Image (cartoon, rainbow over all chains, first blue to last red; front, side, top):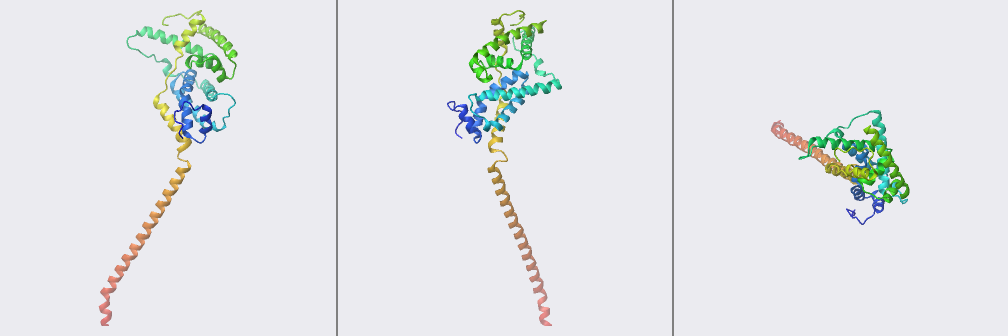
Length: 187
Length: 100
């Protein structure tokens, strides 16, 4: 106890206490849940599955947090890896039973904007997200970490277990592949 | 961005588009609260924690003792009633036996 929302306490200290102190795990949860949720949301494309998978990530993390060892890899990288595996399973199950998420096709209406303009914006947004989701999982992860989380190449490298240079190179290749995907979706 | 045809866009343009589309989303606060409660409850103070088992056992023991006390009181009360009734019956039949 006594660890409630202390930014000076490191993740590793919290991890060490999380096995016996529920508040320590609660603090880790508060620190990382939004990131993991965003990652899963952009990988799945809907809030319902993002909530379900985020819950599973943290339940799994809680069960195995006592086995987590400090090998220089941040705790967030471990969480992303769990999320990555669960999303991969989700995609595999979904490919067997294809379903169309409803909210992907709902166009939100904003007051004051022309419905036709909104529809075009939404269509373009949908096309870009579809193109992103056609990329291999590691490239999707890179784009999410870079644009949603606004992390640097070095931070992304820590999470993805690659060097900063490798991330830079992967990013370059990802943008080229994305351009090709967009062209093929348009064509 | 509306109405733009993103054919042959350059790198800067694509990055700007990504920055516009890939924005952080905020999870439902109720979902976050519930999940946190579920995780913390599951780990520490859940229904199978040591303290909870102790409290349940102590309550069961207390209820058993109270129940046993009640049963003993009822039996004693019933025996007492039988005794009173028996004495009353004896008192009403006693004069006849004396005359005999």
